Length: 550
Image (cartoon, rainbow, N blue to C red; front, side, top):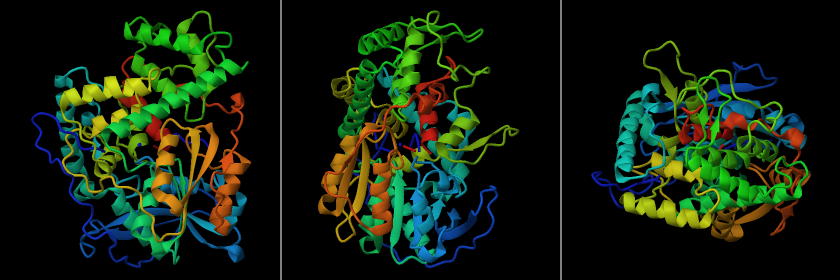
């Protein structure tokens, strides 16, 4: 299954923010209330699906205080007599709907897993149907983007972030400040108790892997099996966070070049793809890369547009479309655009309701409202999970022009990491700051990652495996793409053996890459800017929405 599945504390002049993040929740393991879930019919017509809600404390530091309802969906085990228990799942984001993930479980999980487990998905607090973080569309449309050429632009982004935070907090209520992943971990334990499992079986993808890591640390004696597919690394400072994702983005671009040079299916066959890319970037930087096909508004392609294309093409990977698009951009008159792809008939604005909903949850805006509210959980979650200080514009410039350009000479930076840092400029409290993963006392965790992943790089998986030591095993999928389970018979079997039989693969297990099949490519333009009005932030929104770092 293809999924496109991502915070920080920033110091800038004029912003009074602490150098040290406050501690995480006062009690790392609060008492878990055992409450029931009243399962009933789902609004969605999915065969066998059941939906319900579970009440949990809004603030786990005050378990007897105000409560919120978590939305859940369940696909009961296909073989009740062989049922093991529940498999709790999360698709990442942050902002992805676990309810939607569960409703489509039959398209994701193997027949054996579907037979042996109830598949239980939940919308994390602040997401989708679980009291979503909501913000004014008018404010979201003012997003100035994540790239800054001078101090004034950096300060303007910090000021915008403060306006957005206050708007989202006012429209969401007190939950806005309690959507960190450690709070979600305690919610997961409440789900485990409610479904009657003594130990948790969990499958998390991308940002959902942070929940799994932290559950094993908070509740090590309650772990049965935890799969971490395409992992987050929660032990990186600012420089490491930016540079490791830039390395991952460059690695995927290098993999694309290697594929293109060795494939007769590449539209750039016979050319030097890296040289063509360099030339396109140069033309884009000079404002000379113009696509005339959009009526009355030619698309002036920017370097950010190109970098967004390269990044998003690594999710599938969708390299056939990417190569064809590059060839077409180089010579629009001489190259036929890929079949099934093309520009939409109508242009979109800087950020439409569908984009914000994709980035932050599944709820829809009221299009008839003068002051539309749309779900947008991403920065509220990220900025409570990562503290990544940047000490002014000089530090930012050094990180972008020095550190990132050195490790990513072709793609320049890791776009999700840059957007993460920019989105959290000026954030004053980080409830769940970084720390090494520690699953001591837990059953060992299964870590599985693509060798070439633009969003959660293999370097993060290696780092996490080193942190876990004997408490985790890393499986390497030798191909490209984001999210690994189901890509090949090997990746499915190693996960199923662990989930069903609690058998870990041997250390160093590797699964061969699947062929890059042109028939399975999706239209790349679904994740690309649709007009000259679009920004890099919109590309990020589409990628996060496709993600479901989803």
